[in-house]
Length: 217
Image 1 (cartoon, rainbow, N blue to C red):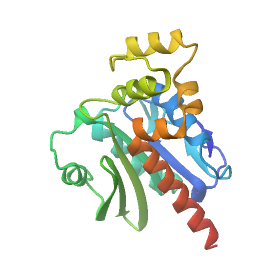
Image 2 (image 1 turned 45 degrees about the vertical axis):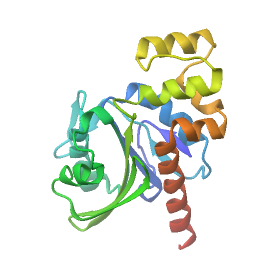
Image 3 (image 1 turned 180 degrees about the vertical axis):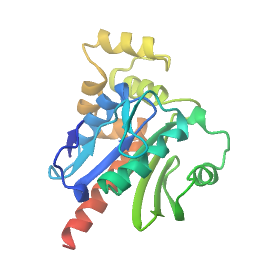
């Protein structure tokens, strides 16, 4: 799957927009994930701290938690994109019923249907005006954040126990002459599935949906 930061003249039917709270760290992670999947004609826009908001304007800053979803309305109205990949850390959710909390935060969306792809990965079909949307939601971290997933992959790949905090993760990766992109890109498939069960489920589903729609043309 091809990755881009700027949308340019890409076909909206082939694009999935990634939505995260920050964008810098997740760029490396999502770029590596996307490149492990087939379908080079399909495109994943990598997250950015400059996101569209309002009537074609751009807002520079960090979104937190579910506030990232507010940008979808502009992506739809201005660019006609209909597929999204939304990552959110577990610490931003208060309810153990993840489906209910996600649904309650989809303000302004209609005909919401949520299907679980894994324990913390969800496929959402919904409407926004006359547009049918697909949103993949991944809740990262068993207790708090995505660093827990990264630390687990480091343990599986290198046998090195590391605390799930950024400085310790960076130190461990440096010790193994690696970085987040290399770690994800070169990881054994079974290790990646164990550490990132929900994200791998989402990417597999995105790929299958895109191939299915292409075959129907």
